[in-house]
Amino acid sequence: MDEKILKWLYDVDNAIFEIDSYFSGFPKDFLQYKQNIMLKRAVERDLEIIGEAVNKIIKKDNSYLIKISEAKSIIGLRNLVVHAYDSISDEIIWSVLLNHLPKLKSEIKLIITTNS
Image 1 (cartoon, rainbow, N blue to C red):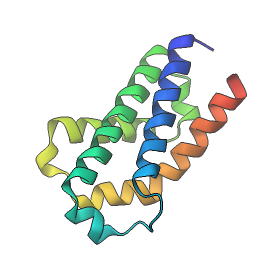
Image 2 (spheres, rainbow, N blue to C red):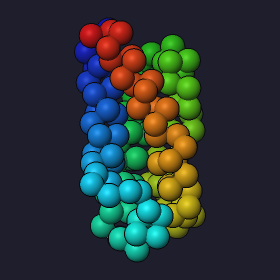
Image 3 (tube, rainbow, N blue to C red):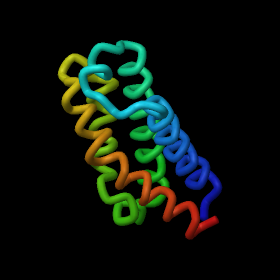
């Protein structure tokens, strides 16, 4: 595996780990998330990192479009958070955390362990 791709995969893995760590020790609660500006900004920043890393991976080797099932949506979310921040709702981000991040986490772990 290309060393740059592996580095970007680890960047995604680390950003997911950071997001998970923000909620360690207590259950994920949407109302608490919505009221905590620092938490929201930290999550959004990690989602930016994930999207940027996935974008770089796909540009370097588009075969990862198959391995990372939601790659284009991940990149699209990153673009929204960066360029259209005022159109992102807490509900959208929360949905990503609950419904999409666990799958991405599994896919990234599988890619890393299969190719390391």
